[in-house]
Amino acid sequence: MPTMPAAIATALGQLRCDEVPIPDPEPGMVLVRTELASICGSDLHICYMGWNVYEWPLPHGYPGHEGVGVVVDGNDTGFQEGEVVLTAPNIWSSRTFAGYQLIDPKFLLRLPAEVPLAHLLMAQQLGTVVFGCRKLPSLVGKTVAVVGQGSVGLFHDFMLRRIGAHRIIAVEPVPERLEHARRMGVDDLIDVTGQRATDAVLDLTNGQGADLVIEAVGSIETLNQSLKMVKPLGQIAVFGLPPTMERVPFDWDTFFRQRLDIHTVFGAQDEPGLPAFQLAVDFIQSGEIDMEPFVTHQYPISRVQEAFDLADAKGDGALKVSLTF
Image 1 (cartoon, rainbow, N blue to C red):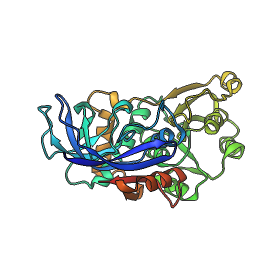
Image 2: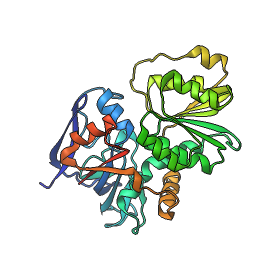
Image 3: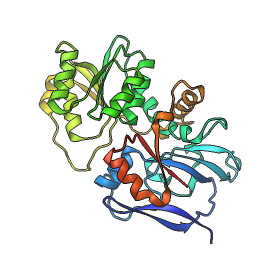
């Protein structure tokens, strides 16, 4: 029986690579050979914090959802053998950390042949940011603070300017990431955390706070910090995945008194036709965004533990850690 390499999370923070059977074709599903997959912050929340985990081990290939690959069997779905595709499954069907994926065609997007796969891989996460930005109000003349300058925060920097933000403030304690933010064209860089970061945002906005805060970390601290960075009647977009399934402390008093609006960003993959991901591909193909700085580390799937540990530690200048097959 033909086999493939597939990552498996066996316990909190513990992963390995197994050889498992290649999935059999199923009606209405496409068999894709994975070429590259990248580790998302949500994968770390799941594998290192236990978010949305009810029992270990997790299924082989899960929770990978950022991938590019080649169609092996289109199974009369309209996809043809040999086509290069972005695989963007939702959280329940994510199996990108495996050599082959059996995937619903609604989660596939055809990719241009002339663009490096490592660059096109970034279209998955950029697409989710595009999706989130489409939910925002008009930002013309507005000030936005982006908390966290990993790849998600940096993709927000890119998009916010294109939808009219007047001033972008980047909040991030890691110097290398702030340098990326500077190259993205943000207006102000804040290299501290906690109350000092809040004070810095208030100082930059004459004590008013930002019109909008993007929470791009996914921590209890930064969620509550965002409440104090935003101006009265302002908005907060929570992009970062929760660190736990348990209830967390929330500064309800500030939220209530400041009359804030908060919304989350989730479900980009469920839009028919994947329009946000298509726009992300268009940005990459046109060269409007340079993805080379994001392609920082690649590991073979056999070294999945190493790859995850690096992504979790955010060390060695890592922005996006990818797996090869």
